[in-house]
Image (cartoon, rainbow, N blue to C red):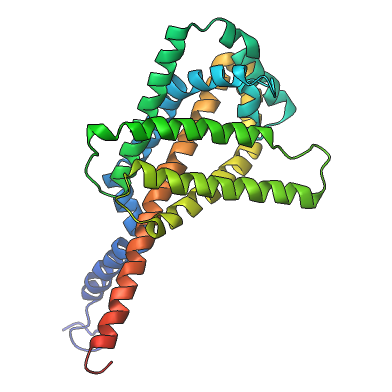
Length: 292
């Protein structure tokens, strides 16, 4: 009979069979595991890619016309996009070449074309609503809630106008830059906090939506910092290799990142809310127990 170290019946394969299911169960029930499984259920990456495609097809043409009509700044949509991306001077020139002169879009747009652009923009609001509903596992809202898409689109355009009208000065001090960045961060939080409540038709309480709005604001800030170091040199490099098509590819990648942050943050907010409710119910259960 072969000699074995350890207690009788101490089989390494049995140990493996015990700890591996525990580790697997712990990973599935952790915050990261829940976020991964919920993200797969709602097809987060596919929705982020759809967000980017719809943005470029429905929202961007409308914003181009609105930016051209903003006579106060006279910057055009290219300047809006550059400010949101935070890219370098070389990449800024490539983006400006892609969208042309600011006044041409307004001069060549008819009333019928403007109405069509507005209708397409409303469909983008419907897509964002669907993404939020999937993140919170809610049924699709009824058709008479379409007025919410119109209101959301109008407030979105107004928020973008305020954002581009209050940039940080070029030679501003560190304090001024910090104050402007903090105001932008707080404004982003307020907009997406309100956006979730409006597009979800008030079916989720304000308090439950706050974590998702905070995550969205921080995620978009992180995406802007990321774009300064990654997307900015990519625009300059792809413009040389592929021309304007290379710039479009980088902008589409950035929009995918925006969609991932918007939908993913709503999902993270839901997980945070569920964990908070679970903890509160556990504490109440302990207090009501005989030994509590």
